[in-house]
Image 1 (tube, rainbow, N blue to C red):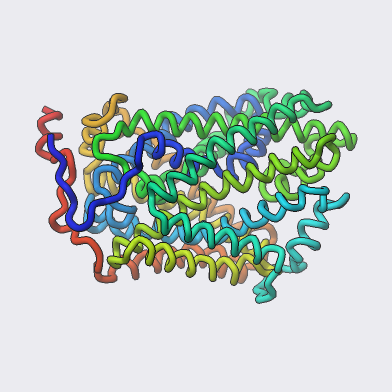
Image 2 (image 1 turned 180 degrees about the vertical axis):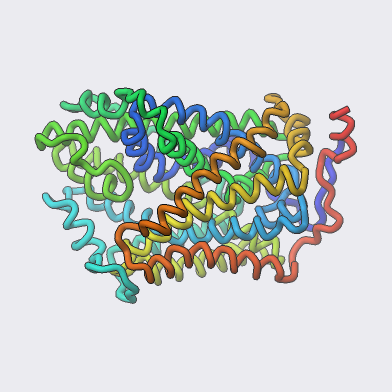
Length: 517
């Protein structure tokens, strides 16, 4: 077998398989691992939740991760170009995914700015005794009602500017010198820092109560469909699959790279970190409940409340609180930043390929536009309202819809599922049988469709967080609509970049057909 080079300039590659794995782990391990998994597990059967969680990992998480890997590694492009090469009409799916990456990145950066601020606040426990009032009033200056404000919050704006400047620099340096290096440094630091935090947390008075609350199994929960939906939802969102990130990252892998074995490492590393985060978070929550004489159900278990209200209260009660605060918020910054890098890479590379821009021009253009949107919507006094609404609709509607459309299109419309399976088997040690096609073409879409239908019905009938209908239409359904319209416009735009007409995937279809026989 010989490699066939793509037309145009030689594509950048990761310097090693280790670099790719660390970058993929950096993308998967993010804020959701720390503030979402513990709360979901607690509310969904405790220790019993691990059963549907692991089943979801094996039947949906890893199979769809392999699908992303195969598309990116074979067709050598970000989502729009790779899916265009797979089937020309599928380009619009790639742009829908890219629009979602853009939308998620502009508010995700704001949360990292919060974490960066709280890293500074950790020195001296500057949030005081009432952490909720400090977060919402003193720091974010949140308005009483949802609306649209142009009043910038300086405490958010300055760290947000630092985040975007650093993102632009990293992307301008390229895949090997920028993206890979930040993950090679960041992921070991994250593991060491968060590992030290967990060791400290489990030794606190009351930690056992917290762990019992998290892991005591409620076996009756296994008969609840909502628990299974929660498990598939958690795996799906935490692994960065089916919305373009892993397609872009795998497109920079060497052509003979062992993709399925790398996927197994990334998938189980992500889940291991989630369980580690659950242990650390609930040990700390058990300590807080013990100190304040409260029940576990009285504490904020997930989301921004956990990280920026409940955890500062935990830190304030602890001996050696400064170190604990630095470790926790430092971990949040690193986990969030490596994930943000992957989000913006997916957008930047897609724009670079479509419009024929240089790497640095694309990085600066995407970075500046993203920063302007971030400041306009999420660094204002209504930023918290907007962020919460956009996040709900982008993730629970947009990303799930993206996954359903992509899996069905690849397996049932373009009929490329078996080709991608044979591609992975030709270069990887862990072989995929036809069971993989069943998982990505039947099991995955069914569960995702159930998730999507249930969420859409809930949002239509109940709204979200008591917010006004007009607000949900603009920032909720409007977010999904923006992704759809943007995808269509970018698809019909002329290609000014690399010519994909003379692209030849490797190994060739003829070779893979011989493998089949």
